[in-house]
Every structure is written in C-alpha cells, then in structure tokens.
Image (cartoon, rainbow, N blue to C red):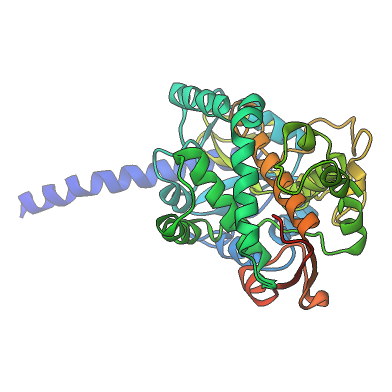
Length: 392
C-alpha cells in the first residue's frame, strides 16, 4: 500500500510542477501591462474566428474588428499560443529590425510542417544568414539581367501560346510562376513531371496566399497598354524583352506596387519574443508569439488615401506617404527581406507585357470580380480572351 502511495506521489510531481508553472505564468501575465485584447475560448482561443475571416471577401476582417476595439496593438490567442498582433508600422519595423536579438522566427506548427524544417523561412542564426546571402546573390539584378530574363520571357511566351479563348487567369498565373521557379532553381523546362510536381505544390500552398490581377478596368488596361505597345513597336515580334525594356515600364511598376499593396503574397510574419519586450507602453512576455501584419498597414487610411481602392496612379512621382517609415513592406524587411523581391517584380512585369500586347480580355461575369478572390471564386469566374496576334 505504501509503495502504491509513493508511486502515485512520484507520478504526480510533474503534473503539480506543470500546474504551478502555468499558474505562475498566468499570475505574471496579469501583472504585466499587456496590449489589450482577449484570449478567446480555452485551448482554441480565437483561431476559428481567424480562419473563417480569411474565407470572406474582406481581406482583413479579423484584424479590422480588433483594431477597432483595441487599437493597432492587441492580444489574442491563435494556433494554440497567446499572440500579439501588430497593425502598427513602427512596431512592425521594430520587430523586423530586431531579428535575432529580441525576436526569432517562429511559425505555427501547421505552417512549419508544410514548409519543412529546411525551409529558408524557418532557418535561424548563422545558417539563415549564410543561406539568405547565397539566395540574394542568386537573384540580384545583374544575374536577372544577364541570365534569367531570357528564360522568363521565353517561358511566359510558351505558356501564353497554349491559352484558349477562355481561361482561369489565377490558375494560369500560378502555373507560369511555378514553371519559372523550376527553371531557375533546377534548370528544367516544363514537362509532364513538372506539371505533376506543380499539382502537389499547389496542394501545399493553396491556403497561403492569393494574388489578384485587378486589371479588368478599361482605364487600367489602356494605361498599362500606353506603355507596352511603345516597347513592342520598337522591336520585332520575335524579339524577347531586354533589361532596358523592363526599366522602361514606369506605369507597370505602379501597377505591381499597387497589386502588392492591396494583396501582397504574405499578409505578415510570425516571430517569438526572446526576452520580455517593452514597446508602445506595453510588455510582451518572453516566449510569446507576435504577428507583424503588413497588409493591415497597407490598407490603413492613415497611410494610403482610399486605401481599399485599387489606384496605381498613387505610386507616381514620390508615391504615397513618402514621409512615413516602412509603411510599404510587401517583401518584409530587416535581415529576412525576401531575397527574390527583384526577381518577382521582373516576372510579373514580363507576364503583364505579353498579356496586354497579345490579348484583349474581359471577365466572363464582370459584376462578380473581386480583388480578393477565394478559391471558389477563382474557379467559378473565368475570363474571356481574344488573341491580338499569333506571333508570341
């Protein structure tokens, strides 16, 4: 009997210790000046609200509602952990610039498992610095100009030749992007096996992001066409784009900027605090997650006039809010600035050039188009194409 009692007591020690640690952490949190907010339901927190919000046509309903209630820095509980969300550009800049000192990269387990432990996005410390530097050297301007642009132009033309008169633009754009990536990383042209690999890849990234193409307005179409027709007029139809052509697309760059502002590839980044962090009069406890929301800043009326209106002309001259610091961060910043930012812009520009000079197009159901399409909408509403020339 005594032996059983001792066994039960020994087994209970870890449970009691864990409970005491949780109680201590809870009491400590109550004493700290945390950002306002709510942790939601036990265990699940507000995860279900976050997931359901991203299935709506409004790109940021979860953050919008809480910013309205608590301000641009608020506390919540998602993906199993207490998390501080930031919709404040100064706080986002602070988070990005203090990578490796006060914050470290830390994504929810569901995302980390999909990316894999060797993903550059998840690497930390010296390994990340070396791999990031290597990737940056692979995709710098001179490499793109001297080596990659030719393949980008060729593969975009190859894909556009296969288009019918009715396509799902989002799906075709994803296909082109994937084939360009395979060519640049593995030196393989598209084929049967790359298409099979692409389908597997799409399953992984399906919920990560969507990139709209809000170019169906006649006004935008004419403005961007003011520019690409001029480039095409000075070249033979068989000639590909050159670096000087890319550099002579000022309005296209405005369109790219505005597309990335309205719906950039990632809405923000997750980090974990490495120590108690004091910011904006609050304390974020050590070990907590933070989420720096880029898109919430991009859609803030304080920094962009009529922020939820697609308006590429806002980027002409000095651009919007030129005195604000880091309000436009579609590729992140700090030591983890996306190494492929210039390559991505080149690929979009080349795609748009061949699209507007080779096709006339219109949405199949014009009143149904939205700038933030869900997967269901992408598959339901194709666009109709009319080929302008046959010499892609």
